[in-house]
Length: 477
Image 1: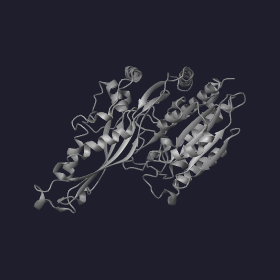
Image 2: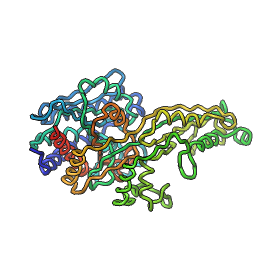
Image 3: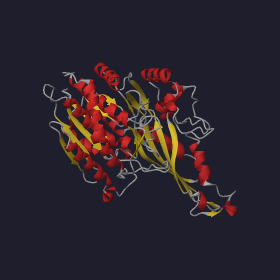
Image 4: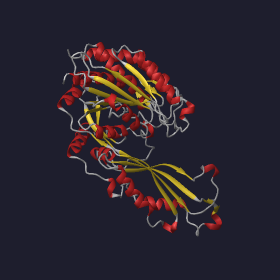
């Protein structure tokens, strides 16, 4: 018997209201910052706290056959593992892998009055606080979806869950866990990931591609110590100016266009059609929510929505995300500083090889440096993107039906500009798997920034959607 959509929606609504939302509020209160931002995470214990809390919550769920374990490899952040056998009559070897993460981005500044990263606040169906939407809800929603299938008399294949604690640092610990758990994971035919975005809160959005991420540190040194700018400027070059000139080799400062050819890729025809379809239906709605100051305007005008969507999903970009060697304005003296260090974040088209891109950027930044300055360029991280395989007819039909049943609107698919290292890893490891990549990070939800929120109605509906897709997947066997 197929799962009744009305029953799935109602069950997940109750679970969210009575069980998930309180658990997420407790989760938000824990400053479980990812390992890259908290090298002393083991001593602080916050990552252990959130994974243990999620495990305890999971063990209380009325899910037949559920087993839960916190796996800890030496020197690695912990991982929550769960497993649920297939319901009766379903091929016991068919496997669904459900993924999420519990580590968080740093708090950031700029939270509105009354809001903060570690204090949950609900306003107009929005649960504010760091990590609720990105991606603490995923562990709870994944289990709630399985629970809804069983409670509604539906069916599901064997389900296994990987909930990691290093995603916000580029998932450095996840490959070790995937290898360690490989015999228990098996060969998934369906991967469900709830760590992505949604174009609006009106329908199911599935992500069909993710950009890669290249992190590079550029250091320019001229002096062994700072010197008075009045006596040395005009003779001693400014390190910031040299760094700026080097960046001109990789990016057009007027347009933001990346100048290194290895960072570009052709957009597949299917993705061009996908972008055009969304642009026709929604115009610039997906790119109009950014909090521009008065007078500022986007790089690509709002009158070209397809070009905007292509730019944020299939084109390379550079963002300077950090700097060292620059004192705060209030304490800056008239000194020629000895060095400037910049942290460069490149977003790469989904099909670009990150290692090749990194080598090309290093080459561009290190040859024939102005004034013979000492330049050090280090590739800190290089994660290739992901382009989804062709969607199987059963999954396309299941996603369409689930969106109508839960949101009352047709489903939409689109690439996303962010990165999830896990997806590329799984795409290579399980090339025959189908993927349901979705999430709750819609307009203004502001993941990684201040005022991050989870839209609670969308969380409930996405959970019901997963339940319906699990039931449809089981029917294939």
